[in-house]
Length: 99
Image (tube, rainbow, N blue to C red; front, side, top):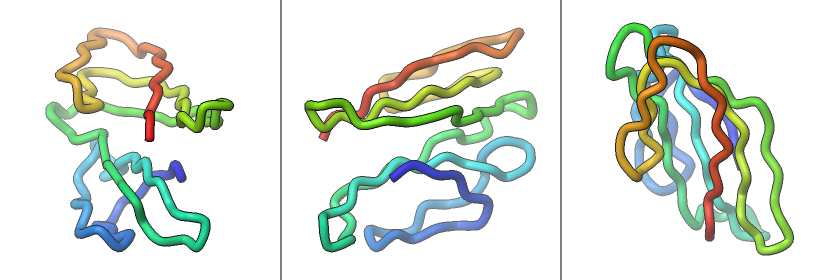
């Protein structure tokens, strides 16, 4: 599952705090079981500076079960492997989340 949220969100694994881009928007990636139970989740898009923004464009599942996410961002984005600076402009990124 891929989505965005403004208010704090709990998908069943604990609270994911609000506070993403200047409008409060954060992006969430979650893996659910066939019955809808949460297996894993991660939120990103924390506002490290007033100009940081992230926009999800599209997503897909590849044959191996990885989630592929196309997004663009401005400022700095951290998907878990360290900061990815994109200043001064808007950059595109394809991220792969492996189960």
